[in-house]
Length: 110
Image (cartoon, rainbow, N blue to C red; front, side):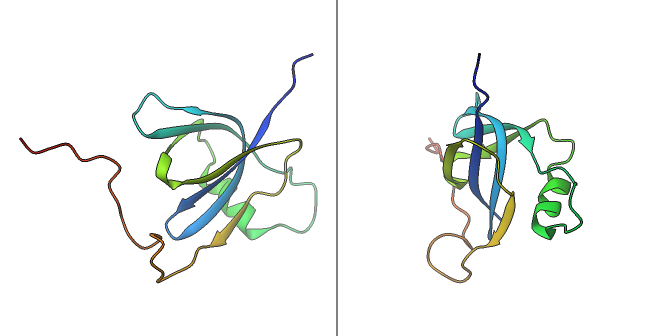
């Protein structure tokens, strides 16, 4: 019987750190992009709703596949079971690149 893998992907998005669970992660055909697809969220079976998970559910609603720049990926873990998707505020005003835009590749101007 084939195992079903679930991946926890931690990435940076506009000064926030997203932790999402997906069924598939692979190198995209676009240079420098990682593709994540098959988003997995908790079912709405509890009365208490986590606002950050709800925001992620809304953000990725209807998204089949997302192309994430490789330099925005912090970590990819293969996990046994799904946890809660969440958003964490990243450090602001620090020299770690959260507030800076950087180019992945710049061709020579010849």
